[in-house]
Length: 267
Length: 263
Image (tube, rainbow over all chains, first blue to last red; front, side):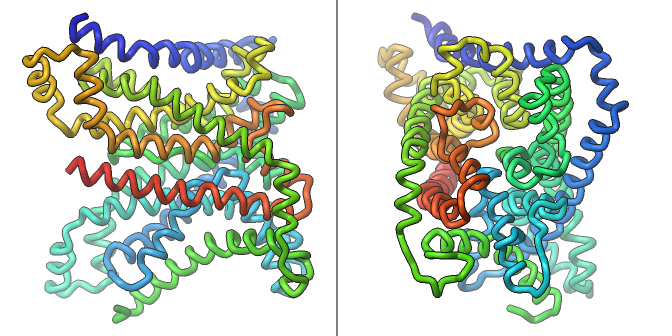
C-alpha cells in the first residue's frame, strides 16, 4: 500500500459516518421542511404567522440582551483577572469557568434555586419573589452559561495585549477611563465581536435551559419542540430548525472570522 | 492593588459574577443533603436523598458512563486517523471537510436530533437502541477530537519525521502507530477528556433521541426537576457535579498541557 492510499484509508471511516449521520440527515431535514401543503412557502409562513414571528423576535431580543450583558460582565472580570495577580485569583477563575460543563437543564435548575418558589431570593426577601419561569429568569439562565464562554475568549485576547501600550498611555497622561476606551477596547474589539457572536448563537439555540424554565415562554427551540412532539407538524419543525441552524451557523462563521477558536455551543 | 475606584468596581463585578455562578451550585449541594430544605439546615443533614437517587436513577447513571466510553472509543477510531489524514493534506478539501464535520458545533442539538429522527426514526431496532443516542453523541463530540489531535499534529514537522522512518523501511501503517500516535498523544488525551465530559453532560440531542428505556443522566435530571421534590433533584444534581467537575478540571489541565507542548 502506498503512503497516499493509506492516508485516504485513514479518512474513510470518518467520511462514511459523516455521510450517513450528518450529510444525509441534514439533507432530509431540509427536504422535509418543504413537504407540507404549503411547500417551500412554509418559510414565508414563519414571517406571516404571529405565533412564529413573535417567537422569533422574542428569541432574538433575549439573545441580544444576554449577549451585551455577558460581554459587559465578562470583559470587566476578564480584564481584572488578566491585569492583576493576587491570592485567590485561581479560585475566582475556576468558579467563573465551572458552568462550562453544565448541561442546559442544570443551568435551568440553578435559576430555579435562585428564583423559584423555594428559591433563595423568595426566602430572603419579604413578599413574593418568583421569577425563575419568567423572561427575566430565562435571561438569567442564558447569562449563566454565557459568562464563562465569553470570559475565556476575552481573557485569551487580553493576555496578548502588550502592557507597554497601557503604560505609554499612562505616561502620556491618560486617565484609566481613557485607557479603557482608547487602548484596551479597540485592541479587544475582534475578540469581543467573536465572543458576542458565540454568546448570541448559543442563546438562540439553547434548548435545555428553555426546557426547564420556559414552560410558558415561546422561544424558538421550545416552539420547534412543541411543533414536533405535540402538534406533529414535522414540516414546520424542520423549517424552523433550518432557520435556527442557519442563524447560529452564520454567527459562528462571524466568530471564526474575527478570532481563531470557537467554544462549544451547548446550553 | 485597589488604588483606583475603577479597580474596585472591576473587583466588585468579578465577585458578583462569581457569586451568581457559585451560590446556586452551593444551594444545590446543600439541598441535596438536607432533611427538609424548606425548613433549612436546622432540620438536619442526611444522605438518604442520595440513596433515593441511587435507587431511582442508577440505571441512567450507568447508561451515561457506558455511552461516554463507547463515544470515546468511536471518536478515537474515527477521529485520530482522520486528523492524521487532514494534517498530511493541508489543502482546501481538508478545510472544507473539517468545516463540515464541525457543523454540529454550530447547529443546535435540537435541529440535529430532528434531522436524525426524520431519517432513521422509522428504523425500529435502531430507534429504540442506545446506539441511536451514541450516534448523536459521536456527531457532537467528534469535531473536538479531530481538532484537538489536528492542532498538535499541525504544530510538529510530521513530514520530516515520516520521511526519516520511511527511509528506514517503515510501512505507512507502522509509521502511523510508531510516530504519529505517540506524537499526537497530548492532543488525543485532551480530546478524549473533552469527549467524555461533553458526552456525560449532553442533553439537547439526547432528550429527543432517548426512549423510556434509554434514559441518560441529564435526561434523568430533567425528569427529576419536573416531577421530584427539590431535595431529590438537588441530590441528583450533586451526584452529577461529583462526576463532571473532576472531569472538567482534568480536561482543562490536559488542554493547557497540549497547548504548552505545541509552543
